[in-house]
Length: 316
Image (cartoon, rainbow, N blue to C red):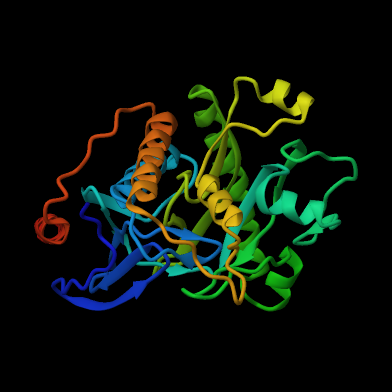
């Protein structure tokens, strides 16, 4: 199936382009940014060699919906979504940290806990917790923002400020926004019968110094969800939780002896497996948004995107 793995657009008044693990960001004059969500799949900070059909569309449309649903509590960069895979917004200077917030002891936190660690990013985790237990209150465990090919690294609030990565004043604002977004995200998830387990937010600064939410929000790539129904019973029995996230991809890689470590070889992703991942992402979309997923025309994705973006730019 057609997927969008890489782009090389030349938009009017284009200044430069930044290519992340999944998104490609074109910076134009007049402080405008065009963000293209590709179909690339990243896990353990490694980009898989094949794309997942409709994945970029799914991430872009969830992020757009969630930005609109949180704009009243936290300002964001978004102006328009002219294409299924594209968002256009204000140019920002991104903070070089990801604000990871965890309501439950899952994923990376659980793996660290199982290894005997009781402090994560300077935050103490109590003894006696089981995997997927709820924390008494959500904890923020930041990570440095790595370039493609590098690994994000855990970092404490103290080190971020001490090393001058973010000023103390700005970091306090990031914390405040992070808690507010997680609270709203938890409420939105609850209406869908879901639990927002953990997520990450990224922020940037506009030219006038305003801190805004950027990138994605509450997508299955940036977040972990559990099904609320049966959560307590599964915890009581020590069973694995039913979840909505790309954790299934991570678990498939782990079962094939890959965690992004040196010397490890990526397992082959067959066409059948890729199709199954695409189906899971569509399931995630429909569960998270409560809406039926409508597939965009993927006959000629590059041309479709270029046409839609050019038409939108004329209106800005």
